[in-house]
Structures are given as structure tokens and as C-alpha cells.
Image (tube, rainbow, N blue to C red; front, side, top):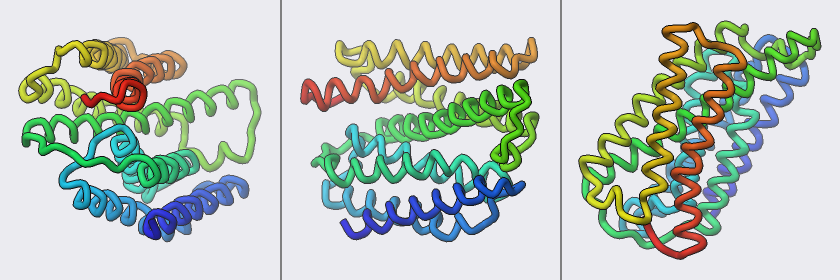
Amino acid sequence: MTIVLIAIVLYLAATIALVLGVARGRPGPGRAWLLPALPAVALHVVHHALAWRAAGGTDLHFFSALSLVGLGMALLTLLVGARGRMATLGVVVFPIAAATLAGYAGYGHRLVDTMDPGVQLHAWCAVLAYATLAVAALLAIMLWLQERALRRRDFHAWLRVLPPLTELETLLFRTIAAGFVLLTATLLTGVLFVDDLFAQHLVHKTVLSVLSWLAFGALLLGRWRRGWRGAVAVRWTLAAMALLVLSFFGTKFVLELVLHRTL
């Protein structure tokens, strides 16, 4: 539990460092946030490793999966934020990572059955896809806020810590494209390796995942063929992400925490 508490404190310290940078309205948040963020992510990984060893295998139940998505979002923030203004994402991402880690530490540990390698591949593709597309959803919200502020000529200090509009939009679609590839891999590995993919308790999950995949695919196609951007891109991204959240965590929540069944 000590590892978890230290990680949470470090996540919050990184958040505070970024908030202070935003409050000053500097062109970039600097590098001070990296000092607590890097060990926070490392300790997050260590806690999962120790918990899984105690559980006897890879735990991917509700709270563990939620924590892994938070961890993936924090890792992506480190990767894209260390090079420029996208570190501002951490203002939202790091508290999410801290909260999901706390949830896993407090409620999420469970003994697990051994999964086949193919099923594990499917599960890891899913976690990576959800983390990547969750970051894309946050980027879409940032894009919407920036466009709205510019339209209203509300030139707040926080606008200076964001990247230029075109750069943010480019990163949004690159992130969506990466997430779409991972989501495609998730669906393909599910078809190949999950025997009961269309069993009664997985029908809703499968249908919603496919609908989300179609929505993200339509958005990328619209961007390529018709130059979709701005509010259109934001609406499609958030709608597709809502379907994805319902498909995975909505299903897991109902089955595991309400009905006390496993996927």
C-alpha cells in the first residue's frame, strides 16, 4: 500500500506542477512535472506486477482494467508531453491515473484463472486501444475548448499553454488512427482467440465495440475524403468513445460488480 500512496502523491505533485504552469500562462509547462510523473508511472507498474504475482496471474477484472487504462493514458501523456505543450493533458490524465490506481488498490485484487496466450493478446490490445482512444477523447475536448475560446475572442492565459490549433488537430487524428489500429487488432484477436465471443453475456459488448470501430473508421474516412475537422471531429470522437466505454467498462461493471459474474 505504501507504493500506491507514494504513486498517488507523485501523480498529484505532477498535476500541481502542470497547473502552476497553466496559471502562469507560459508557452510551455516546462519540465518540472516530469520529476514526479516518471516515478509515479513506474510505481504504478510495480504495483500491478506485485498484485498479479500475488493473484497468480494477470488480473484484468474491472478495477484492474480501469487502472491499466489510467496507466496507459499516463504513459502516453509522458510520451507526447515530454516534447512540447501537450503535457497540459496531464492536468486531467494524472488525477485519473491516481484515482484508478487507488480504486484497484482498495477494491480490485482478485485471484485469476490462467488465460491462453491468444486471449491475453486480445486483452492487452483492448487495454491499449481504450487508453489511446481515451487520450484522443481528451484531445478532442481540448480542441473544442480552444476553438470556442477563439471564436468568442476569449484569450485566456491557458490558451498560451496549448499547442497551435492545427498541431492539436493533427495530433488528435494521429492518436485516433493509432487507437483505431489497436481496436481493429482487439476485434480480430477476439474473433480468433475468444471462443465465446458471441455468448449471451458478451453480445452487448461485441455489438457496441463494433459500432465504436465503425464510428472511428467513418471519422478517419471523413477526414481523408472530406477534410472533416473542428466540431464535426469532436462530436464523432466523443460519440465513438462513449460507445467504447459502454462496451467494455459498462459491460464489466454490470457483470462483475452488479451480477457478480466474470467475462
